[in-house]
Length: 287
Image (cartoon, rainbow, N blue to C red; front, side, top):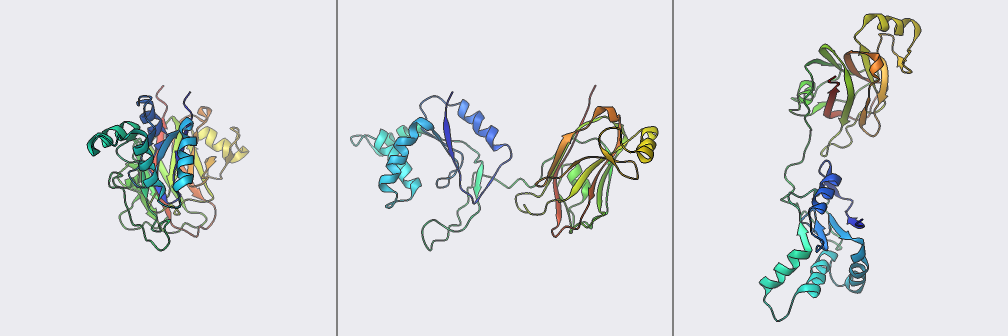
């Protein structure tokens, strides 16, 4: 088993599923490499083998007061593989065997202050591409509705269809977002993500995920006698099956509930921030 060490900074944004992308890239490499890079900027997104760390750390400790760490990293490679009797082209080829960069970059620098006193650092990684502000899924046909005041063109239909985000002004207690299927469906899993890279604070807080069973008989039983599925029930027959935590709500739906007519997100308290949905996924049961 290969033991590795990964280096990030605290003023970056990352692409979705970056951990799996790193694993996939690392497993494709030969045993020669010393550094795998997932950003072209500075000392961001650098992967090292644990066995090489003592050498790297010792080199940094000797010269960190003289030069930035990312410069020292290049100097270390020069010391290891460059022959003073060969030209610069040969040196770069040898370093490239040990220092391998993945493209596109998985991390983007968003900070402005350099570690050097008084220096402003507005560097951007050109290989990162555009920020992914929403993620699309193949959701089943549904009628969508909300009590929230929608901001400009960021409608609920667009996030459900994977075309854009849903964005609305600050929710208050009693507000809702609903998805009513055109025909009752067996829903296996659900996933909702609020906030995105550009607006990370616009999340849903104290919001529950509720489902409406399609069968009227168990729905009436829920209203009259409470839930028999270990979920609490609302007065209008919805089952509370989950809630948002850290901006995300996800889970599996008990198949004994049967087919689902609708899924609703219910806001239980006033929010100080706007609400942005960047991902909506309904996974259907196919058998």
